[in-house]
Image (tube, rainbow, N blue to C red; front, side, top):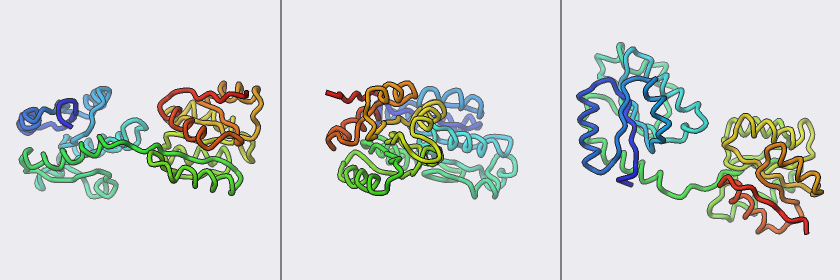
Length: 262
């Protein structure tokens, strides 16, 4: 990746951070450094491609930063490398046993370690970041046959992945919270909670998920109401399969997809 790749290292040991910075800047990476959780949170606005989470005092700070990253809708997918403290320093600035059981990361190492040893692993993770990502789609419809038909269509699209199905609006909100899809294909009329109500909640609470309305109720009034609810597009079920695929790609990029009634 080189050049444009940004690495955020969070560590309170100046000598280690300086050695890390020299090694990776020599390989044309941009290195951003932070010595505390608060500073690291502020620097996440610079959108690093990978986070190296080192040692922070007091004990528990590194875990708190890890937890914050993994619960953040924007940052939870960023690759994470964890560097734990030396064994004798873990009571002061390392990971405690119960914290380690909740650890989610792409690589875990412990000090003492030379930053140069991390180069191959970080380069590999950054290479993964550059690979084209598939659009994660959630299908929301109360009819099993409809869901299965859409899944069959999207499965053959190389740039798409169906990550879940929901049978009503409430189920859709829970699935969005758990799975973080890029696009939610949403029917309008469903039991428990309508697709329009679910769209309002998803648009307000989970803005990274774009809602594309897919329904048999294709009157122009429904299109306008869906847009007001926060939907990024509207497609009737009678539309061609190619239009559905095109619509998913469009809304995943943040563009509004308008289907013509003509």
